[in-house]
Structures are given as structure tokens and as C-alpha cells.
Length: 238
Ligand SMILES: [Zn+2]
Image (tube, rainbow, N blue to C red; front, side, top):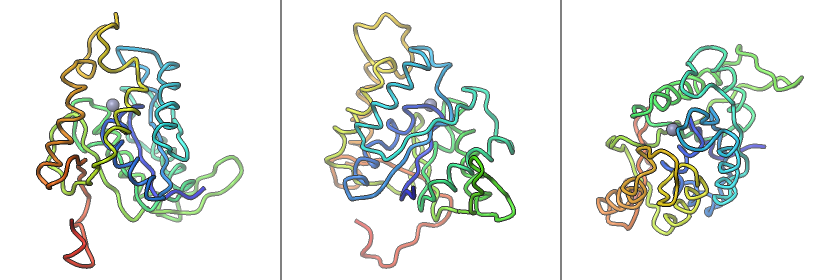
């Protein structure tokens, strides 16, 4: 299946937290979008890997993505080496996305920066025809996405561009609330983590609202790029 956009996250929920509204908007515009999680988030303080598998599937259904896969790398300990790059390359060649979106280039959780570089490197390597990969017995063709964008998660990285997601913030929040084990729940008896606070839940709205304020819309999500942004015309920008 060919996808327009393939979005990678080190942990289930990274994608929804950082660009869930953008995904919902692109799907509403007719784009085919898939998600690949690198790990099952098994080191997460709250919940369990099995619970997070189910939550991730529920969130994918809410957003309406065409496919969601999990590479089952080791949470916290995966590295950016040939073996891991090969697995990411297989996903890129399998889905042939025009656009790849991956983790923030730098973040509080060490897996985010690692995942960002791993996926970025794999996007380049995936275009080299002498790197051979197979799924089952089927050899894959080389494929390099046209664009690699990085979303922004915990840290306030200055975006290179923002997407107007007015009208899609509720869908994002709905997809996040599928991760019942992870976020603020006043009745939970599990330990409180930085993302399980009331402030963090509210930050989903106020950070998107702040980016929206700066571009004159209600809500926006920000991204960074790996090369210059190009437009055909000055009129292309909102
Ligand atoms: Zn994460």
C-alpha cells in the first residue's frame, strides 16, 4: 500500500501528542497516512505494553490512519545502527511515503532525539539501490521520501513552519484520551509522571493555541525541516 505520509514515533502517543491534529487534517483532505511506532513504550511508568498496544490501536482508529505498525525496538535502549536502520528502511520502502514525519530533533526523553536521527538516516539510506531489503521473500525497491519533517513534543523548539489545525484540535484530544493509562486522571492510583499532570493535559490546548495566535488562527502545530522550505509562489503561504 502506498501512503502519502508516514509518521514515526519512538513511543505510542508521541505522534498523537505532537502532530495528531495535522494528521487528522491531512486525512480529511484525502491523504493516506500511516503510523509506525519504534517501541511499545514498555518502560513507561504507567500502564503496560499490552495496554498501550490497545490504546495505540484505539487512537489510530480515532484519527483514521490507514495502518499502524510497531517495530518492537527496546524502549529506552534502541540505538541508531545498521540493524535498526534496516527495519526502518523496510517500512519506508513498504509504504513509499512522499512525506515522512518523525520525532523532535531534541527532547526531554532520550528516545526522541535518537528516534529522530535514526528515522532521518534511514530515509536517506532507503534511497540507495545497493542496500537490499526484503519483506518475507519479496525484494523491495529503493525509495526516498521527498520531505522529512520533525514534529515538536516536550521542549519548546522554534518551528520552521506551522500547520493551521483549527477545527482539528478536538480530534487530537480525542485520540490522546485513548491513552487512558498515560494522561491526567484524577481517579488514577498510578504514580504521577510529567505527562500525567493536569498542566500537561491543558498544555495540549494552550501550546497549539499559542502557535495559532502567532499566525492569526485558532490552533496550529509546528515542525522543523532538514533543508530550505521552497514555495512556487509567494502567494503559497497563508
Ligand atoms: Zn515518547
